[in-house]
Image 1 (cartoon, rainbow, N blue to C red):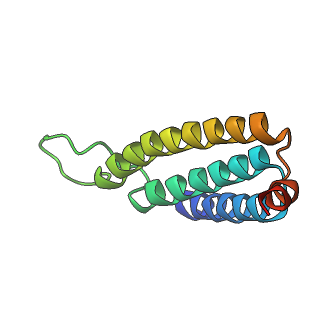
Image 2 (cartoon, rainbow, N blue to C red):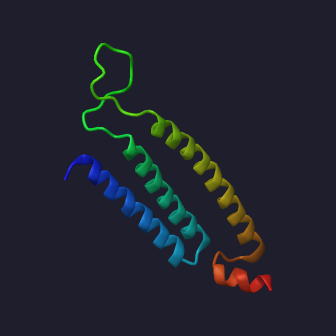
Image 3 (cartoon, rainbow, N blue to C red):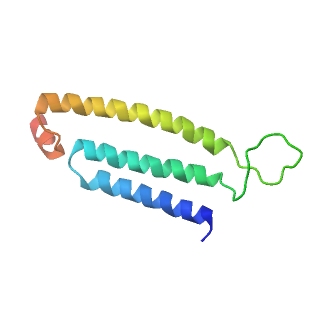
Length: 114
């Protein structure tokens, strides 16, 4: 198995694991953790698309044999920053929900709404 296939497999495993955690857990913090695991898998998948075994940074030099595509790296860096901001906002909302309802269980919160 080459390196690229291993990264694709790990990315798919993280995405599926994150989806399973977010779909099966009832605690809001665990759901956010599942979404973060899924986001990590998506970021790894995007980075893997630009991966070349033995590739170097695309810096001007005399030989242009194997260079790695920098676009996925820039996109993932932006996605990481946005993901951290969204996670911080989601956790602050969860704190407010807990202060108001004294529970993080999604079923109890839905019942309190009605």
